[in-house]
Length: 559
Figure 1 (cartoon, rainbow, N blue to C red):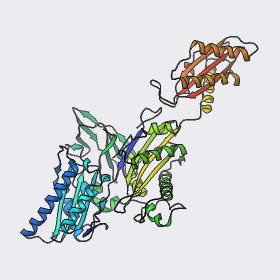
Figure 2 (figure 1 turned 45 degrees about the vertical axis):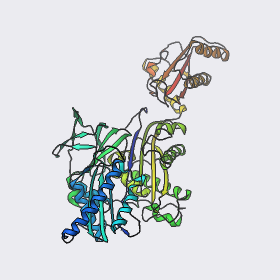
Figure 3 (figure 1 turned 180 degrees about the vertical axis):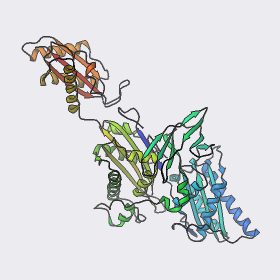
Figure 4 (figure 1 turned 120 degrees about the vertical axis):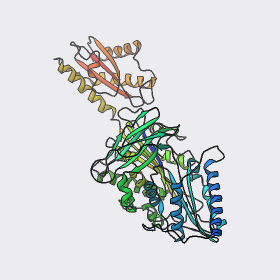
């Protein structure tokens, strides 16, 4: 699941959210959960069963399918499709389970792609044991609210083995895009009724992400899937939905499926474990082992945040990008977001603390650009790897414009002892300090007057003080104008502070453009000798101007 895009003055943050539901491990008595690695390239079938055995398998499959459909509908009238391709993969998973092996998520994903299934969200389940224990374990897994089962609408279920020693496997996907084209360099698709504004992201073999804009005609979207050079390209569809931008489909060009299972390998140890990691959780923080048999502690959270921040910095450094500054106020906003989800808010960007912009404003942060990723997986290393595998999330992580950021991590341990991590990542381009902006405005006044053949004005600290106070009052007032009475107060104060004064010109400008000096009414006045410049930023939206917009007051004086 995900989110995306803005530039310059913030009007809408680039947000992306992603959830990874790992293989559900059944821990009920009499059930042997499968968690080993790939079974190899051969998906061999077991010996052909007799009629009685087929009936026993069919009975278990029907009951498991009924339980799954019940969990997917949650009492609502929803169409659940039994997909033959998913059933084929479930058969391979069940066969592997009977041999004490597991395809793993990457193995299932590869088989989905090999069969032309591009659905982004999917969840696999496999277990081995006696019939009643398998069904009990499946009920328990389906009752787990973290699974989000009611989001899925396509299923495949398979059973192998014999009474007393069955293997049960299922695959569910969430299908919101219907592809109707023939593939190749162009493809076509229809979106679900809840989605619009489709975007296509393409990651080339070197890891660079580009955005392409599909065209639409009467609801039919046409996409450009052209590739160049050798190597694998990854495509991803993102659309605006009920919870904001979401990833709907993810797939490679044909070369990945041809290369086999090794194509999905990922480096999860790019950065060493930070000092201070509790010894019994160190391997888990790296993504190398299950969490210890205890609840997560604040020390674990701190270690996970340090490790994830190190992964982010190392990833950017490896691609020649500047290191990000860890901003405490941004960190606070990200932690607030992760904590909202951890306590039960809907997984996404709009939680009880508001949006990313709301959280940043509450932390006192003003930024010209904001990008946010949200993820949930078995550990922070897995979250990072998954974000990098998603073109839209990857674009956020490797955004060249951002200069600072912060992350929030919430660790959880469920009733079966499994640790997991909820992650919120915020990357920002902070607005320059107001005094820096004031200096830029003064430089632009000099530029305009020089171009007009006028003398350079003297910058007056007294005039700038009056201008700054006026700008601050306007920014706090909720109205973007300089009344006649306010102008008169400035003039009276100037005449009080200066022995002799002539004309006084006062201008107001509301924009972040520091090159707008030519629009200042009095900037070309030939009789002015001095100037004062003061600025303040809006802390809340006023009309069309978002928080962070610069309110500038200019005072010109004739001596």
